[in-house]
Amino acid sequence: MAAELQIQQHDNEGIRILELHGRLTIGDSEGALRADVVALADGGIVRIVLNFLHVAEMDDDGLGALVFCKAYLLKRGGSLKLMNLSPRHMNLIVLARLEAVFEVYKTEPDAVDSFFPDRQPKRYDILEFVREQEKEASGGAAGPVVQQSRRVDEIEPAQPGAAAPRCPPHGDS
Image (cartoon, rainbow, N blue to C red; front, side, top):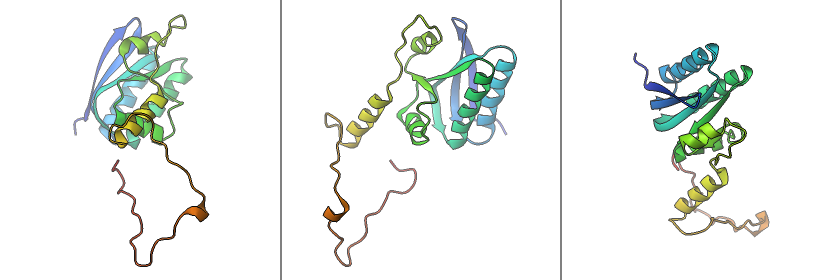
């Protein structure tokens, strides 16, 4: 079975950029990423940026591969940075509570600059991401969506025979 992920590589100022194309999901694709990062690290290349511009899908196994790669590189004195994540990719990282684990950048120059202490790269702002998601959820209204909290005793009980509120099926946003 062919891998569902193709990986192209290039260097930018001594930083290895891996351009991912396809799906980063359970099976061959996440295994291919792990194998490529291990081979690079074992060969002394430990400063890596993953470009997600052409990643159509990522699941929890793909996210697990990212955590593995980050840890493998850290043990060898390196680092793993991410760039060009889609809102779906960012949402998965936020839901898994890994936003503090990964440095995320919008552009390749910012990601590369992050490896140099004398440069000031612009990191992807997680708060900005959350605000963008809230704006989209509110139909494009300006400003963050704020829900007023209520005490339990202020909530009106459901009427007899009324249908209980339903949560959307898993995977719906």
